[in-house]
Image 1 (cartoon, one colour):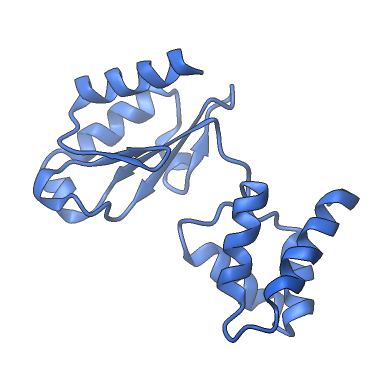
Image 2: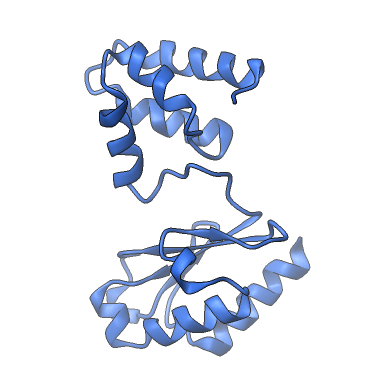
Length: 162
């Protein structure tokens, strides 16, 4: 259920760009920026305003890993799961991250926020650091050659900064 304030925010954001060719992606980016996620309840409103089906809007929201349907934690941890990083130990790093953040690996496959709301763990499929993998990002700051010890240091620093 959307609050009246959220509904007004959505209507304002959609109205600002709905006349653009290919308006859906810019609108979704604006919503993600303003709210931190794209609420599932917003899909109908967006579809109606852009004369699209709900399935079309939902398909775009779920296709791109950038868009979240739930608010993220205070710190977003993204670990690259692409082939170059896998070949350099990303699977071990992913398993360690799930363990350290107490996140069920099955849930984290699509992004999962810890119970305390402090961390969101998400898989990504290339951070552009293939030659210095495995890679991860903490709140969009990219880190190269991340092993479990470096992961622990980065997460500890994020915890202490909170």
